[in-house]
Image (cartoon, helix red, strand yellow):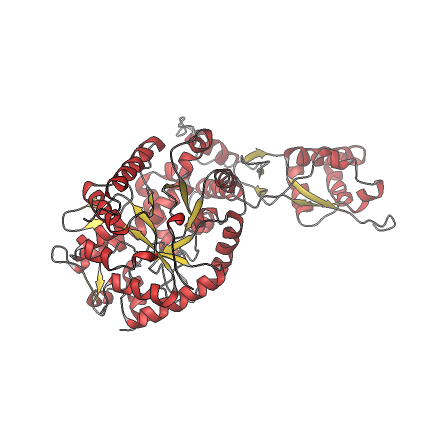
Length: 263
Length: 281
């Protein structure tokens, strides 16, 4: 048999899609072919379930060993890895849990763990410092746009997911948390240097982040804050938010029109 | 691409770099000559993994060891992966780059396992062509490791050692001789491990791996989660006697013990090598 169909059959055996490879391979005088092929079959699921458990420790603890394994095996069967690195395996787990109609808290927890994981080894980049602000010419504010650091992530999970994860990882009691309640505070995740940080933020900060991330300019961000803060305080609030982002290390760089007549 | 490894290329005795040991390595000066990294673990944008790798690279020689090249797969070679591997190599400047004689999946799927190949002329031609492609991209010989296997193919007409020898002859690639894998496959496929080792082109062997495994009586599973057993140490001693000095490294991928335990295991390897190098077995 040619190599390509042979590899197809071998992989089919591992993925529970057929056993025709058994006539093409052999074990040894002590262990038959099925036993030896079973090593590959077992190792595939075991390795990937373990990987998901490492990447989603709070989800694994919350669901419990048996339920997590069953869920993970179903996920792997639905979304076999197409990545060179097993590190990417869990990228659709949050969506999968939602499609599977898991409790919202579980999919929120998965989204949170994945976002933290992504931030952990996201691209390095320099960050803007407050003293750079002094170099911004007065006319620059009218066209100021921001590029956020590659590690910045935004989530709108339940506040409960954050609390739950913290308690689980600290091995503190968590079963008494109200399972059904879903809060609504948005979460910003970033990595100032090497350690990932996250913070629940007010709705106006979340709205400003999403606006600026999508290419909005600073005057537009001020307008966005008008409703909540009024004309007197919107610009001040916008400056506070900008300061929070810069001091936190969330901004990689800014852009503005160098022509003072541009707007 | 010609392969010629001089005595100066022998790095000594190394360990696999694992995150559990970063702090201890950087805080002290453990008796480790070099580190082997899992390439894929550092093919990321940034953050703590690369930061720690750069810090360790400043103090130790590093070699890159990949698990996802999928050299034997009939899927096209993943050129994006290869580009990222080459980019990491430019940054890290490893002494050499290795991966496995295996395939990891077809039809776009990655099984994330080191799957065995049938040793046929078709496979030989296929793998040799891909080694050439990899070596052209990396600008250096690829170091190819033998894997542990649990089945053989009914259509194989070459032994694994003859297959590896033919690849070296055709491509100029070098070899990473995993002594534990030879032991595991020898048990599973009932051949003499020293027949395997003696048949390899000795001058192409760049590195040796040592590791632990799990013996189930009828078969052995290559788990890398146990200390090295005496039989593998004995095989290593015979290998040292046969080959002379070769860079040697201990792999532990699960149940990772404190660094001191692995350093002690590495000292045992040093001791065995010192006592057996060049001594006829």
